[in-house]
Image 1 (cartoon, rainbow, N blue to C red):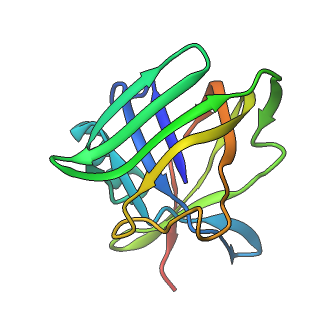
Image 2: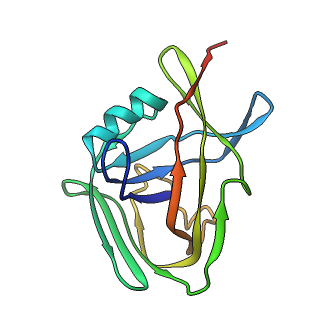
Length: 169
């Protein structure tokens, strides 16, 4: 599960909450697939589907970043999907997609779209001090062994190139 606050993107700044359930093997490589994603921008909904076959839903985000903690709530009206407060650790470390290479593969109407993401930044360990997840939309990370820890990467530079079209077999 990832929370992302894009300050700059081709479709304008926006926030997203996404879920990648795990890895699968495709054409001899390690691949991922986004199965659920909420974003704060209608332009991101449109371009995500058009460019990468990522089915996004529009939601409202409350994002409050403090000196050492961040609070995020994601909802549609009164329906809250996620509420979390995270405290960032002090020790920075490098983060790079070179350490964990993978491709994102999404099924479009006529083909698979494969994208090899690249990114790098400065990570810090986070601890969840408050956490609520709506189990109608996402699995409970605490129940599945996700624990109360994660990684915050800030700043982070992500390159999301054009997808490669792979015909359906």
